[in-house]
Image 1 (cartoon, rainbow, N blue to C red):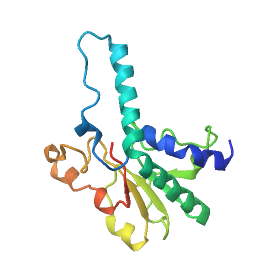
Image 2: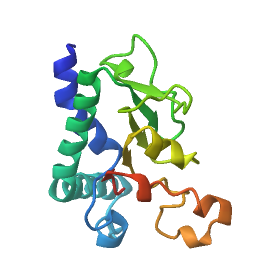
Image 3: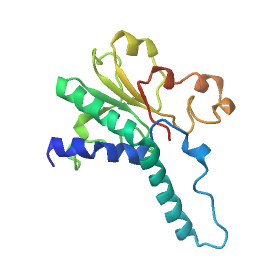
Image 4: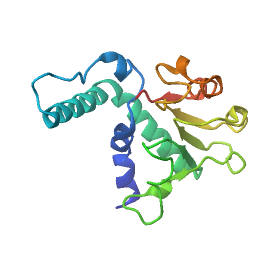
Length: 174
């Protein structure tokens, strides 16, 4: 696959991980279980509803995020990732995997980050001042157990303080 082809597919990859700004999915209430339907029918309906919700509510910011990543790569800067993909932040990114996983470097490294780099993060504990000092473009979203999540007031204080949203230029609402 050529790099330009990969960049065209990036909005869809991001859509699979999350949605962008607008009303949070959890508050919009699609995906309720329906009595009398089999589990497969309910699961497939809920997945379709979620994907439709992402398309209807998040497409503009998904596209903006893909442009931001493309601009960063074109400039020769690095795109970092601290995005929890459901079980880790790095297990799905390794050399020789289909596509171009080398476009996004796993494991944010504040010492290696340079002015103009990009950080894709839904879990991150800082240091936040590095983002401002180095003018890092942040695309952020909530991890289900992070300081930006709905219901975060029930989490430990140190977790609640690990908020990405105040530093994000584009916000992915999941």
